[in-house]
Length: 473
Image (cartoon, rainbow, N blue to C red):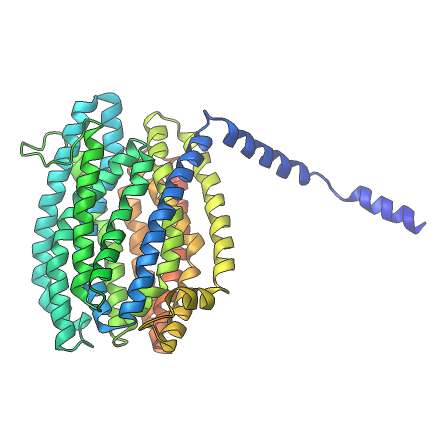
């Protein structure tokens, strides 16, 4: 009787859920094996970009190991990171806005109006970017006397001098970074994923060479290496684009290819990238208030999460953005929405799995890679805690990257602004509350992860809505 009841119970267990799962897996494999499908092309592009970027990020991480041994958690490294942030804020505001606006415009122009018009658009975008960078640099220079006392409060005279020298050297990086990043975006649009993934190895290699030649903790050495590295990258990217009958040489003529829609989009995105750039400023000011070494601690702690996220983001962004753009240009809205949702599941599952593996391993990783030379036990403990806090944001950071790419491809600049503004407000509030409870760098890292997670959920909802609501640009 008992066996009969067991058999009866088994018969009542629904087997239907198994079939949809198996069918979904088979459908996924079928799409990925079909060379003509969008999913298969995205997967191949992601594999190429991600694989090459792994080598580049590996070289950059090797540079950080050398930096840790020479600098430790020190005033000189704090000065370099603050200088890089101060130069990166105005650069990011303009360059990101220009390149994010340029890619959809370039793809559409090249597809419908021909290569010559696309070349003219690129040259004028580079010119506009450089002019805007110059104007914004002047504005930021005027604000420096107010900002520096907040950022350099824990420094002595030597640290303040190193900060000023680093800022001057990084001005070379500032003006080279604009054309370089625009060039990378065009290589992505042209599906030149190999070149786009491999060229960035130049800068970390240049920095390592300079550190090996002069192995002393010096802000100026790091700043010079960054500047020279980007100048060499600019030369290489220009040569790659020349093979496509394109150039990064600024246009000296009138801006007739970048019309009012382009300028409006840049203006909207500049507001969004201002919010993103202010995130870095808020983080550095908060860290500087914790004393010498706090900025360096967060810098080391963010290396591993940034490495993992950058590999995934380069693979996802580089592969997905051109295809999102092309699908929207061709009116394939439903296919674009389905691709967004599938990719969102992949990045969330993958990001969560990585975080679950890496968080318990943080102390081992920090000691393995950084624990040598000037890097102390106290620094290892502080970096481990902050790194664990940063790793919490991995799934959300990948989802945020994916969602923003769709919004940019759709031309929803105002929704990108909403997502970044939300992140900035949440981050500032979380820091203000957290530092009342505990004044350690890990609190700043945790505030960052909380803000990214909430903002990523908002960005995905906006991106999913964007492909269903017509954009009357």
